[in-house]
Length: 281
Ligand code: NAP
Image (cartoon, rainbow, N blue to C red; front, side, top):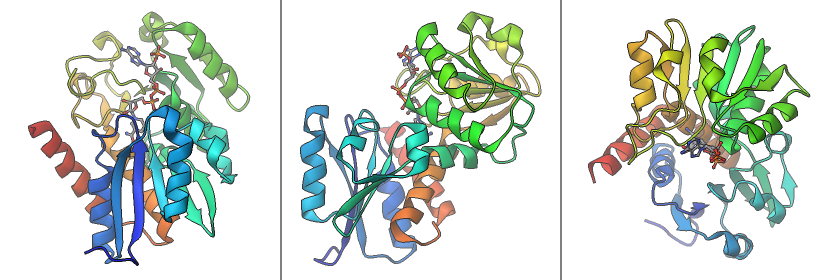
């Protein structure tokens, strides 16, 4: 039961109906016996500033930020963590003493998802050049020494722009999607929504790109088993699903907000159940 002492958290985005963060965090707070509640609010872009001021005025303890607000939310914060500056995006806000601080836990989530995958000395291809691609690319570049990070997608110019930013810290270039097969990457990351529910029969790369021994990391987590992951497994690739990053970024947010270790396995279970329930609808 919520009382006047209950700590309040939420996610803001547009759309937000697809989010399973309420289920993940509600389970986490309950697992740790915390008096906290988590809600989801659809906030249109033109009302972002008002929404942030409202959360501050009401005394929310923190919020997650999702599409399309991860960049613009930075204009409304008092302080931004170095990782979030590097990623150029904030997905977690913490309120403390009347001040709002911004963090990026997508980078940590990506690194947790890729734990155990050999990245040093490898050629990593990222399909997509949006916020998530940027987070994954900078997370890998700040923690490993890959041979190179190749950015690709349906347009070359934005891929080149991200590759230029990355090349300040790591070997990086952009290539047209059609050239991916001949590059023979060791790791492929899908950072586009291709394959996401309800358009689940789509895959971001030609199946001929997939080879035995490659690692394929799909950021899409709904469905948990995407078309790309099925094709990759069939081709003998190691696969990593988006749910691992989803749970990893949520666990890191929990720790920022509460200062306590996150109940990761309970959070993963809640995510799986919630995604299964959403699919069944
Ligand atoms: P974003 O900033 O909007 O970027 C989307 C990227 O996908 C852009 O490069 C875009 O290229 C490309 N794209 C979109 N539709 C496409 C299509 N039909 N064909 C080819 N490319 C297409 O979004 P984001 O925040 O980076 O998110 C990307 C995906 O990652 C989403 O599915 C999101 O759910 C997922 N994600 C997962 C996690 C996790 O924890 N697992 C975390 C963050 C994001 P154009 O500009 O050319 O459209």
